[in-house]
Length: 112
Image (cartoon, rainbow, N blue to C red):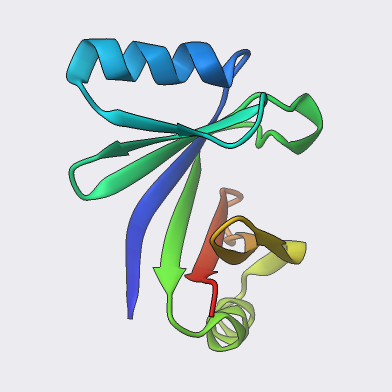
C-alpha cells in the first residue's frame, strides 16, 4: 500500500504557520517543539519545518507505506536515489529520495 498523506513545507515559523491554518480553515495543529508543527486537514497532514538545517528546498511530498524496507528497494530499483537515510521521528520512520526527474520526496511508515 502506498498513499500520499503528508506534505512538509519549509517555514520561518512553524507556530505562525499552524495558527494561520487554525484561524483560516479550523484545522487542528499539533506542535512538536518550537520548530515543527503538524496541521491536520481532511485526508492529509501538512508539516511545517522551521529548522533551516532540516528544511527541504521545496514542499516535501511524503508517501505512507507499511513496509519501509520494501519501499526503499522499489525506489532504488526504479532508478530513485536515497538522499536521506532512514531515521526515526515522533510517530514513525522515514527516508528521502530523489526521483529521476530531480524532485525530492519521502516515504514513511508508522512506528511499530
